[in-house]
Image 1 (cartoon, rainbow, N blue to C red):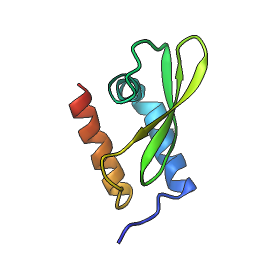
Image 2 (cartoon, rainbow, N blue to C red):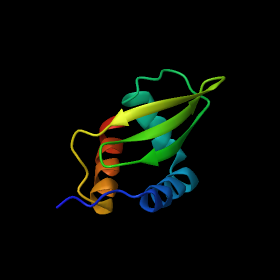
Image 3 (cartoon, rainbow, N blue to C red):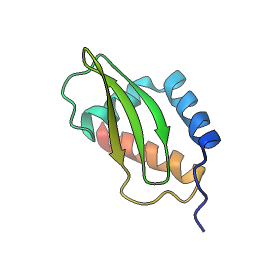
Length: 89
């Protein structure tokens, strides 16, 4: 059964990613969002279907990246983000 990625879970994941994995967020934007240039990127939110990033390429813009499957829970979110990063590298 799918566990809803709540606002609290999203906030926790985003805080961790924005504090410890800014390089990964930039890679997600470049690879999955096909962004060729950016000064910085930040994870805004994550849900069961995808994530919203804010990219800054001289002005801030939102970017939605869809997952290739519906996330089952927060552990699946972690595993999916790790696999996406491996592919983006």
